[in-house]
Image (cartoon, rainbow, N blue to C red; front, side):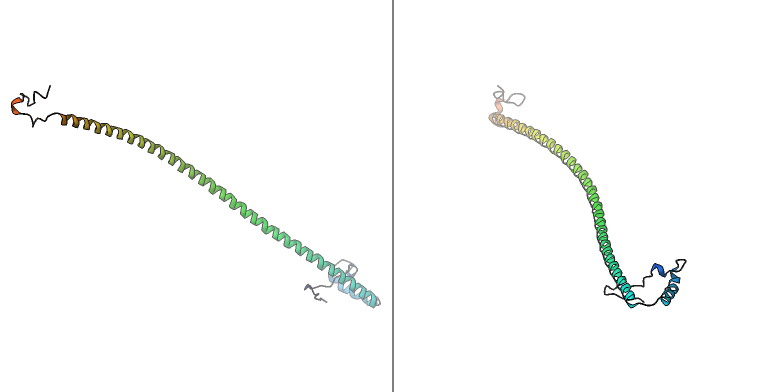
Length: 173
C-alpha cells in the first residue's frame, strides 16, 4: 500500500528481485510474493528490519531526489542566465549597428560642414574684394567731388569770358 512521508512524496511498494516470476514480469510479482510469504514462516523481526531498510533506502532516494532537484534548479537558472546573455549580445550587436549608422551620418554631417565652411570662406573673400572695390569707388567719387568743388562752376562764370564751347577759358588753364 502507498504511504505519504513528511516530504510529500507518494511511495509505491518496492518489488524485490526475488519477487518477480520466472519470466521477470512484474505482474507475476504479486503471485510470487504471495506464494513466497505463504510458504515461509513470518518473522516479525525480519519484516521490521526489512521495513527499516526500505525506509532508509526511501530516505536516501528522497535526498538524492532533492539533490537532483536543486541541481536542476541551478541548471534552469544557468539557462536563464545564458538566455539573458544571448539577448544582451543581440542588443550589443544592434547597438554596434546603430553606432555604425551614426558614424556614417556624422561623416556626412562633417562633409557638409566642411563644404559650407569652404563656401563661407569664399563668400568672405568676395565680400572683402567687393568692400575694397566699393571703398576705391568712394575714394574716387570723393576725389572727383573735391576737384569739382575747387573749380569755379560754369554757372558762376561771367558770360563775357565764356568761350565758344561754353567753358570758361580762364578755368581751363
